[in-house]
Image (cartoon, rainbow, N blue to C red; front, side):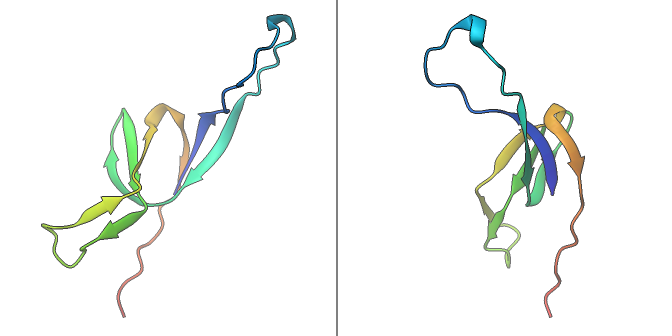
Length: 82
């Protein structure tokens, strides 16, 4: 699980610069398998398919988070098959 900061949504309408009030950043959380972890980016895959064949494993819904935006990483133990 990764907690990270992102920019707020763009302000879609025209507004006067003099009255601009920056909304700041928003705190986000994402959960998944860490498939990339380096100085530039953390990539999480929340979904994996074809896990019975390591040569055919597929991922979907991958999110790429700039490492400089990461606030905290919490390791979550994988469930084991019973």
